[in-house]
Length: 133
Image (tube, rainbow, N blue to C red; front, side):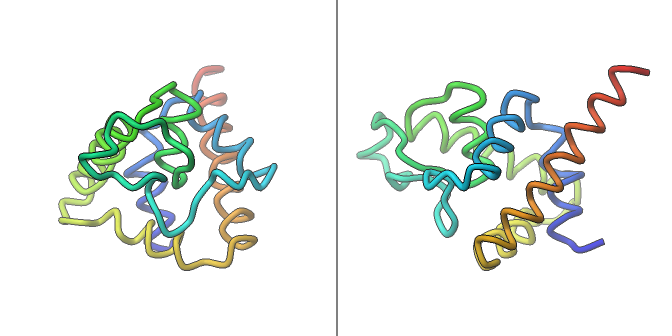
């Protein structure tokens, strides 16, 4: 399995809510322009913009923004950082989350959407299966 996919499945998915995954699913299916590549947030996570409303977000931040109602740059920056720290801890490797972000940011948008959509569906199906058991 590719490293990006392992980081997604084992590092990020366990810490994402079902609502967050569903929001990301919708953004991927609809090619929502507010789902960004190359940036974690828009406006960028700078102190002077921490109270500003979010206008766009990467896949992880999108889950917190549209799925969990975190509305400001500061709130989402903390959400993003917490997810990255947790993923790094799973792999006992500093910046292990980079494997996901390198793929996510560099993949052509159609490839990213297709492959990440399959991963989100896989994650949601796994949760449905777990809750039915």
